[in-house]
Length: 116
Image 1 (cartoon, rainbow, N blue to C red):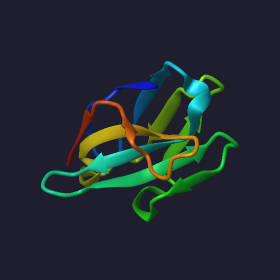
Image 2 (image 1 turned 30 degrees about the horizontal axis):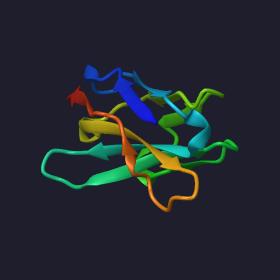
Image 3 (image 1 turned 180 degrees about the horizontal axis):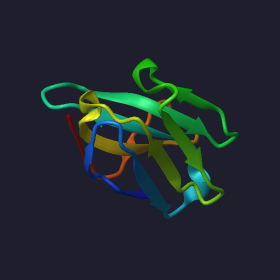
Image 4 (image 1 turned 135 degrees about the vertical axis):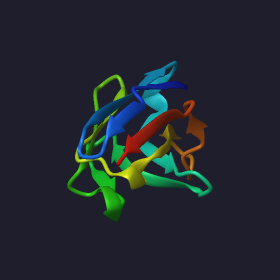
């Protein structure tokens, strides 16, 4: 499985961005997808996830503002609304492969910068 993330950029506070993650290879092996964020000088943390059954989870700081979705081809979108300067960071998509216990298949990071 290979993942290709895109959609980052510079946006003003209150604006919106859509991040996309294109999955390729043996995508039937994907059990769930997630987006992680790494703020400057901080650890990389999961902010949203979705299973192949459509169950979603969100980190508290993005609830009500971000929406994760996934199509049948396991391509994943993170719609980010009402962006805040603290949303600035590198965003990574990741896949949980069936029978594995952690998200260990990664796309490259895409940079989101939110100006105040």
